[in-house]
Image (cartoon, rainbow, N blue to C red; front, side, top):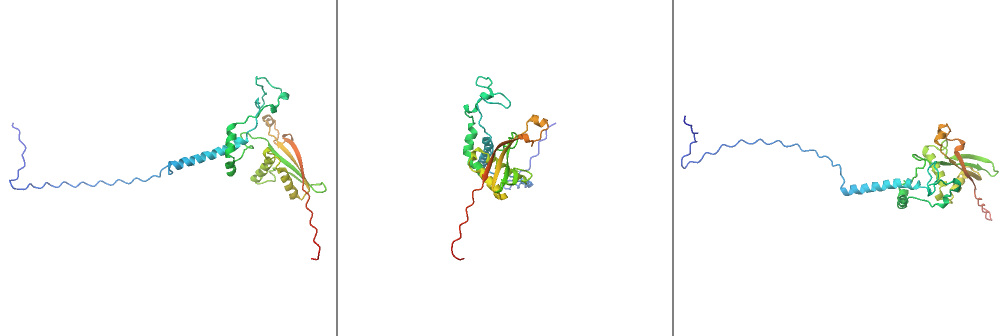
Length: 263
């Protein structure tokens, strides 16, 4: 069988124009893609602002931690004495307590907190973060209180009390102010500044007296064994008398004599 050739389209005669090709079907327009909603950037600030704010926050946190760190420092002596332990000399031999003289050993204080507190002192005072937190965990210390007695000109007791006293100072913030007043009055840094005189004069004027006697007490914490034995936290043996202080108001200036002549 012979192969059939495909028929060729008829060719136009000479001088005739080629027929125009059929128009291609129009392409359907593609549907527009929905616009993606703009999500806010998690970093709306630029890098410079972020670094600046981070440095300021870090600076403030350092000031917050440095103040109690510096206030909690206490002069330690060599050899070191662990709580409940025995002091040892440089050779590791125990030292009898009657022979231990702390005055012979220079105090050892950390350098870093002292240096930081020196330069951050004014900032800590400005933002009021210069607290020691001595009264709170994890290492609370002994507290102090003042008992007072006010007398009149005949040496008769007309008022007595103590502060801080949670039964009288309320709400709690008022009690805390009195507690801080007592602690500041015994601070070595404020010694000789007249805190005791100011407290006594206030009490004398408040109760209309002539003189007052203040007694400073230290209230010690209970030991673990005392807690197991059921000892009360306010047992009389937990209070240590640190000394008394008496103050009398200065004599009032005499009234000037009336000038002569008729009114």
